[in-house]
Length: 349
Image (cartoon, rainbow, N blue to C red):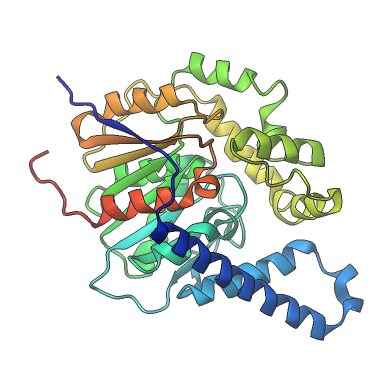
């Protein structure tokens, strides 16, 4: 009989958590202030010539730098380039943690709420998946397995040979493949809000709930679809509710229209391929984290995946959180990741 363990965590901050949030807010404020000061000095005459995302990229780059990360570009061959943010100084008394983002933009956009806290406990490696940010290839691969192979090759070139991996949403599919194909490198796995192991019927049922072509929503090309994507991914609040249309359009132009054809091909491959009836069970200890109000990959998928993975998998449910738990409940999410990755590997499982 496989052992199942699930716990529900409410989002009640302790004083220490409030302190961390305050520190994060102050750090963000200082980063943004510095970036806009530089913008101010350069003159507003250039504002209309520079995409909105260029300014956001500058702010996030400064913030990641303050969090102890620096940008690295790795050429896998003459066709493929990966971009990473990595620890400036790798400390051997810290575990190595690879963070794999989903379809909601670049790694910096998805993980900026988390890196300040996690970088204190881990040597972070934060890649942009192929066709996101500055990562690109002219090779024909579009599978999550191809993404995983490229990630592993890039990490090897950075000198990494043993690490834990954390993947969210689409990044969870890639992280799963990394752990499956390279168990000698991946020590532990954290999967957050990812629909691995669902049947063809379950997938079709959930996709139909969008009420339109899901490709248009997940890779939005207009303001209406972008707003729908964010509303569908969150539960507590809608970050774009009061955002002006020109602001949202700037993100669409800067993020989703770049390498759009390739992003759509990634999604089509993921959503149209037959469910793997012989999906390998991971050999690593695996932590599953889900928001109980996730509408993209509903909670029943978390229980289903936990049962499939068996006694090495444990499920933690974050109360009153949607799909984007990395935004809505990042303090609780960080705490779960830190506890799981830092504890010794259980050799009895």
